[in-house]
Image (cartoon, rainbow, N blue to C red; front, side, top):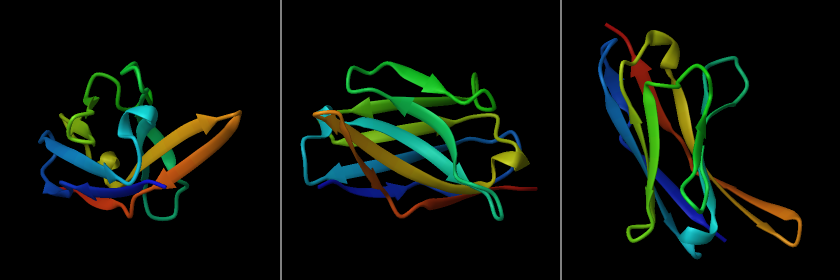
Length: 119
């Protein structure tokens, strides 16, 4: 079992920056691939970024070059640095953890943190 707690959301003007954090507890953090997803009102939850246990990362096309995902295994925390924010980045951002064990995926979600980009 993994418990995930996000923080760092808020209101920011277009072009601004925010850094989201996700603190994990309850299991061996370094065993998990970590990711961020987001959900805008009336829309499905979409992939944003992912970082593997080996720290390789990939991003949705809509955030490439603007967002950076990183992890600190010593602190059991994954981060999402968001720069050059746009109004369309407004959403609830969710932290995700996945461990694959004997071909079975074990998925965990945080409660979400609101990001609002508006002038």
